[in-house]
Image 1 (cartoon, helix red, strand yellow):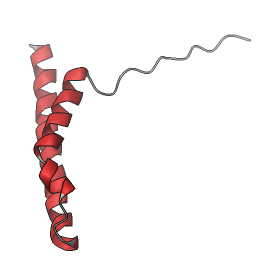
Image 2 (cartoon, helix red, strand yellow; image 1 turned 180 degrees about the vertical axis):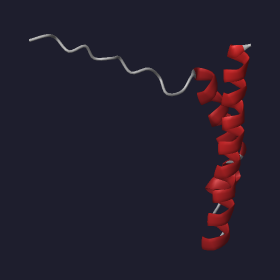
Image 3 (cartoon, helix red, strand yellow; image 1 turned 30 degrees about the vertical axis):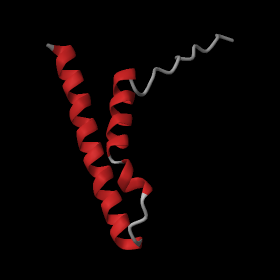
Image 4 (tube, helix red, strand yellow; image 1 turned 90 degrees about the vertical axis):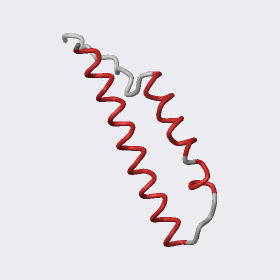
Length: 69
């Protein structure tokens, strides 16, 4: 039988992406650590995660665009 070649998995995140993501999360540390009530705290955290996702996606898109140029 022929040997099956397995592809080695590549990294999901680069070092700069990881560092930027951690920086974004740490900048919102107070919201994640402090209890603010069940409903209001949940809403603030949800909005915070959405902002982090938008900022991170913008950063990744910038990196991709910079590599193309």
